[in-house]
Image (cartoon, rainbow, N blue to C red; front, side):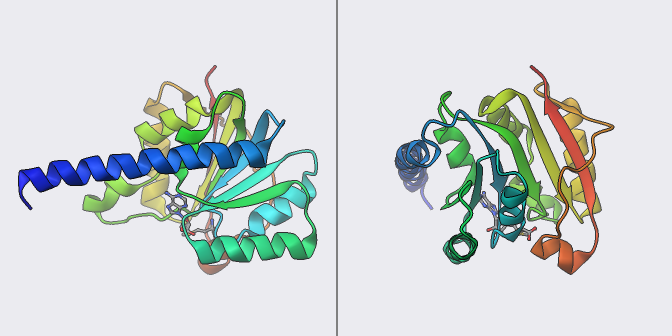
Length: 202
Ligand SMILES: C[S@@+](CC[C@H](N)C(=O)[O-])C[C@H]1O[C@@H](n2cnc3c(N)ncnc32)[C@H](O)[C@@H]1O
């Protein structure tokens, strides 16, 4: 690819991202309405963990997001079948959602359960919990927000703990217990769970 094409490609990608963020801002403001804070699950898959969580926590409004249209369609069917009022699902990319949130709507709890582990070293840059996204999450969160991370992957777990320990906006909570248990699809598959909970440093 020539350098002209590279510049054009980057400009095109930046414009597309800006358009997506703008559309999401409108959508999020419709979905969240007057609620000032909410619970977010990033990479909710078919939504069954969040549906069970929302039923057990009727005072929290829960939003599940995933990149894959079919998974969100399944999540929405689950919600309709179970008539859960305090939940919504969106097909959206997580960093775009975080950039689209305004100070009127902040995340109070964020769950990231069994994210793609990107095991090869050259793919580590794709792991979601990097310093840049921890800053994004902090900016989109209330001052007392908590981040709940669970994985089966030992290397991704150690990586996340290291990222959290060196990030100025988050502090690992040593003694907190996991707030709700029902296995996710990937937990059923792997039967392994490694948890870390972090609190926003206000
Ligand atoms: C390994 S699956 C885990 C699904 C579910 N949390 C579970 O434990 O069964 C990871 C999910 O994250 C979604 N995902 C990956 N990157 C994402 C991103 N940047 N934004 C939103 N969803 C993402 C994928 O589409 C996939 O459904």
